Image (tube, rainbow, N blue to C red; front, side, top):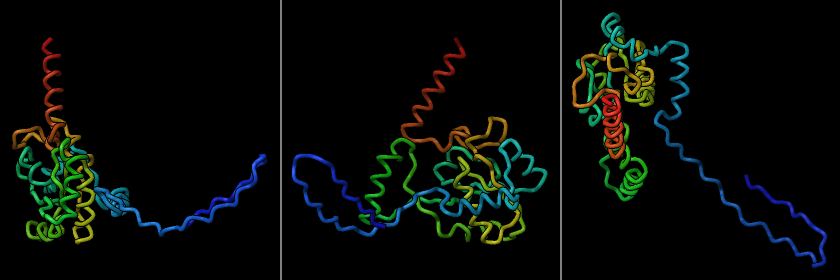
Length: 221
């Protein structure tokens, strides 16, 4: 909607200027929202609040897996699971590397690298359109209990929403993701990094290693 500015006259010795004609207005373009959880965030949070999707803290995850027969579904991209993953977990990535090399995508990749990629080490990704199909192949019984997990808990919210809409009703969500897990929450972990640090890469990884080194030196002194 165009907003017109009213002309305000003031008393001065100079002759009053004629008001300029209003500038032509252009139609406002719709805003592009980039959100890791998208608009489904509202729906899935309602499902969690109503306990249709159960929020499970990292410290309670192993008990849910061992005692309640939940399967841990790790939806992180492969470059994160290669660093650290829970032994016996099912890995079906929600996001995959975007390998499109069209001019627009290349520009997006360049911007992503400048603002995010260089610091975090994260690739430019896109949602795997076959995510639900891959889960259905791995877990055909939709009455199965799935504990959906990622690094920080946002991507797993998105995955849980897609799974719920796809017919999986016995879902758990790892609240806060692996980043909030303690060293003793998941004892059987494979990989070269701690589970809570697997999402960290790029320049921030070396900054983290420096902090760990300084902390270790401080404890020795």
